[in-house]
Amino acid sequence: MDNALLVNYEYCFGCHSCEVACKKSHNLPLGEWGIKVQETTPQKLENGRWMWDFVPYITEKCDFCADRVKEGKKPSCVQHCLAFCIEYGTIEEMVKRLGEVKGKCEILIPR
Ligand code: SF4
Ligand code: SF4
Image (cartoon, rainbow, N blue to C red; front, side):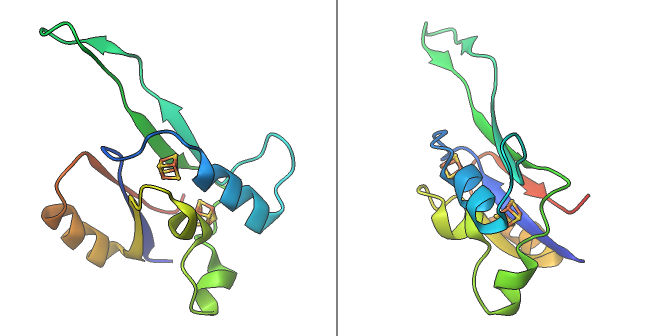
């Protein structure tokens, strides 16, 4: 498989919709996830404000929504992200997008 997800987590606000959408579409049991959102430790900035991020990562349960993609649909997490901050495509396309998109980005590839 040579596809990937690009997550611009600068815009992720930790709503966990991607986790739920993935679990639902794959009928994953309690405690199993295809995507998880991790919250980083808050850091105090020089101006006294606090900063932290929500950073999604995929697990070995992620099959990049092979069945949905075969039907011409977007992966479930991409479809349901409320911040529209997850993109899907080939690794090449996502690397290209990485150079175009402004923000804190990560590319997630299959394990
Ligand atoms: S691409 Fe599909 S299987 Fe992978 S994390 Fe997203 S919803 Fe889950
Ligand atoms: S659905 Fe989008 S905004 Fe919500 S936690 Fe997942 S990546 Fe972040």
